[in-house]
Structure formats: C-alpha cells, structure tokens
Image (cartoon, rainbow, N blue to C red; front, top):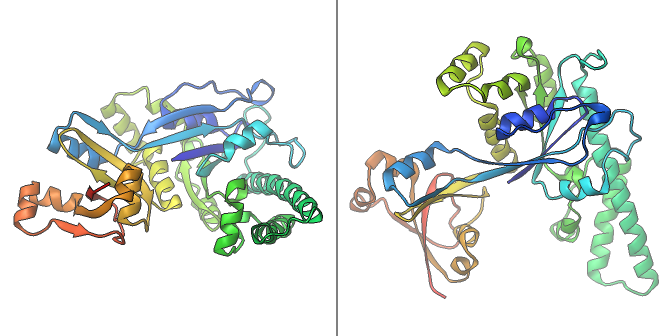
Length: 356
C-alpha cells in the first residue's frame, strides 16, 4: 500500500511523515524546502500477526507494509496547475491514496490564522486541474487519430470516458465522482488521474488544543474521512520509552498512535483487508481488496497458486485463538474447504491446494 502525503507549505506534513515512519526527514518551510519527496516504509504491526508469531514460532515473520511518500509542500502563491512538477505527478500516480495534511495552527512564519477548509479546496482544485490538462491533451491526440482513420471501438470508448473527465474537471468536480461504465474505467486505468484517487484528511492541530476541534472535524468528515493529529507531539513520542509514551498519550487523550490511526483509516478508505498464511517456516500477512475471492488471494501469494487453484483450506484467526491449535479445529470440524468463489474475510488463514 502506498499513501502519498500532500499539503500546503508549512502544514506540518513532514512532521506527520516523521511521526508515521520514525525517520528524521528535515522539516523545512517555504523557499528552503526541497522538491524531492521523502520516502519511508513501515510495517503494519498487526497484533494478530504478533500472536501467530508466538503460536507458530516461525523462522520468518512478515508484516504487511505501508509506503509513505511525503511530497514537497504546495505553494499558496503558485498559479493553478503549476503546483505539481511532472516528476511529482509521475510519482503521485503510483500512490493508492492521498493523505492531505491541513494546517490547524497559526503559521509561525507569517502569523496567518489557519483555514483548513480553504486549504482543502485549494489542494483538491489543483488535483482536478492537473487531471483536466492531461484529459484535454489526450482528447487532442484522439482527435488526431480519428483524422488518420483510426476509429476502433476501444478508441471510441476511451474518447467517451475522457470527454466525461473534461466536462467534470471543467466544473471543478473530481474524477472519483464521475460514474463510468466498466469498459470506460478499463480504458482510462492507465492514466491514474490524481483526483480519481481516494483521499483522506489529517487535521494537524497544536498540542494544547488537540481534541477541541469537533466542529471542524465534522465539517471535514462530511466530505472525506478525516482524523486529527497533534503532529509535533506525535513526533516527540518517538524519542520516549514505551511506558512513558503511553502516559503522555493518556494525558493528551490519544488512545492509539498516529501510525495506527492512519493505518486503520487507510485500510477503511481503500477497502483493504488482511489474510494470513502460517507455518513453521513463515507467518505472513497479505493485503487484498474486500470482496476478493479465494483464487484472487491465491494469486496475491503466487500466480501459480491461482492458475492451478483446487481448494483453499481455511479457518479464522479468531477461531484458532479461541480453540488453541489446528488439531482442535480439525477435531471440532472447524477446518473448511473453500472454492474459487469464496469471498475471503479479514483475519482468514488460508492454505492453498493447487496443481500445475
């Protein structure tokens, strides 16, 4: 899973990035800010994997991971459409979703009071405008192809989809809000339009007012899944021992870390779930889409498993933990054999039977 972190300059998004990854990327502002993104990969510390590790004592344990990409802050003075370089856009297209960091504290450099809703509108408008430029350019190329006599069905389907995007983006409506037919979605898949990506909001508040912005959060949640962070506090927690950090979190009313909360929000936003494979050699978490079938889960492990799929031996983490062993599950008839169309559930433990 890749999450792109975007936001206005001095919104504290690199502070958020450091809190999420445990890295020490330079926190800069305005003219001194570098253009290259910061990259960090973190394990999704799922307590279920931790329990399975103790239970099976494998040689290797592999958690799911999230890659965070911290892009350069967007300049409030830039012209519409000029805030994303071509290099940034290419990398932004690889993200599965964006976390938009909104400043909810007075700007120490200028003294400006925060306006999170305005920042969100500005960022989203630039995502949409970037998509409009791409779509208009593609329409010109399609028109040129048609003049040359290329009018196959695939091109006409793509043209229909691109025209929808141009019309929508011209009205400042993101691509994710457009209703496409399945063949149209397939036709535009390669473009990876920025405003088509799922988006969540991080309201970055100061330590002393954290938890006191419910009206603002309510307003933001009406548009996107939104969570509140105290970015500076979260970054400082990394330097503390576990017990000390827990005490400070309790004092501020934070039940779980920024990393855990954003991980949970990301899985919810993208509709992802985790299934597990277990054994003495390896315990591993796999991330798939909610609604994926057993054969699709098998393909996530290896293409040969999907190609030669026969059955999936299946039981849930919860049932294993309740009864204590695979033998107990077999004795009680709680081991299941599922076919290709079985919809994998969060927490399923799978062993794929296959033949190639």
